[in-house]
Image (cartoon, rainbow, N blue to C red; front, side, top):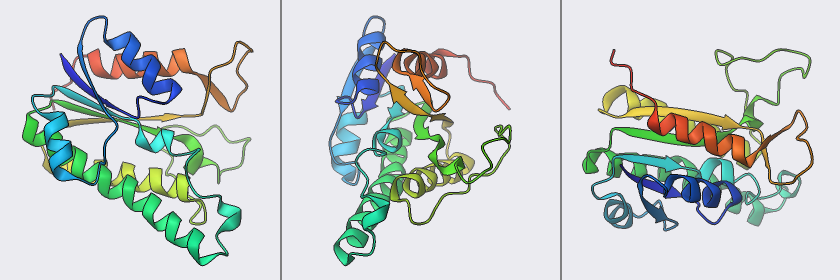
Length: 196
């Protein structure tokens, strides 16, 4: 299977490429997701795409505490556009390439608005903080993917991760170990698709 993976410079991206390259043809795409030509070239003949930009962006987003500054608002807008429109461009390229599935690595950050004592499940609606560019951008990427999945012949799977941990210490309730995140991605790629 030919699989395109974004954000391969991150711990999750690097580990995923290492794992997948044992049995698949991997293309690393760290280019501009807003560039349709670059996306089309990278995704040519792809069977699947793993887009880790939303989960990787958590550390790269502008600090919500600095949004009083006009430059920070501009940076936040660029960040959100990169995630939402970038998802659109990547998914359109995946459809044109004939890919069968698109895995979007996202974050649990936009579910932090719920009481921590609640047992939040898949059916709970995200409540992104509009002053948090990372959470809002990831949420808008998910919504973009969800809407395109309704009209395009592409299976879309969204994996929401807690903070990715790479250490040897046991993970806390707010973390997921990178190896577990890799296994989630591998299962999303290799699991049979249900036809409905």
